[in-house]
Image 1: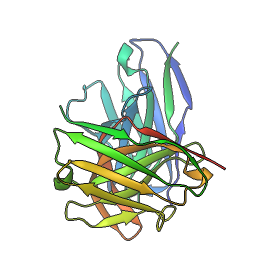
Image 2: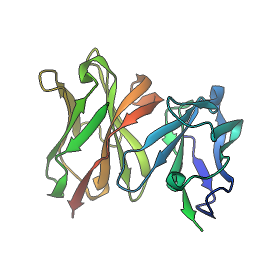
Image 3: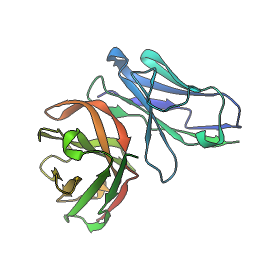
Image 4: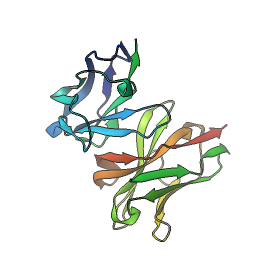
Length: 107
Length: 124
C-alpha cells in the first residue's frame, strides 16, 4: 500500500499570500495518478486537481498542482478568504489511498 | 445543481446494524459509478465500496462480508447496509461519484463529486 504523507500539518497564512502544500508518497505513483481535494468544515469535499496537474471543472487558476514520482505539490498562488480549509491528496496508481491532510488556517 | 445528500447515520452498539442512504439530485445514480468513502479517527480517509452502473460491486477488505452497497433506481438513491459493526467503523461516511475502475478488493480512481457526509458512531 502506498502511504501518502502530507506536510505541513497546519499552514498559517494571511489572505493574499502563497500557499505551498506537499504530498510525499512512500513509493512512486504511476502515471502521476494523484488528486487533491479541498474540504471546508461541515461541507462536502471538492475535487481540485486530478492527474497531478489538471484542474477540475470550475476550479480557479490560482490552484495548481505539480510533481511526479513520489513528490507532489499543491500551490495556491494568492489565498482568498474562501481557500482556508483542509486539503487532502489521494493516489490511484496502486489501489487508492489518501494523505492525512493539511489545514490552511488564517494567520 | 448536482447534489448528494447522505442520511441514516447515528449511534449503534458493537455488533449492530445501520443503513445509510444517499439521495442524488441532478445526477442519475444508476448511470454512474457510485461509492462510499469514510473518514475514521484512526485511519483517516478510506474507500469502502463501489457499485458500477452495471451493478458490479466491490468492497474494501475491512468491510467485506459485513457491508452491502446497493441502489434503488426508482428513488435515485444509493445505500450502504452496515452489519456486524465494530468500534473501528466509527466514521463520517460520504457518498461520492467514482471515476475509475476496480479489480477484486482494489479500486483505482478518484471521486469527483461528494456529499457532506453522515456520522456513524459505534459504541463498544
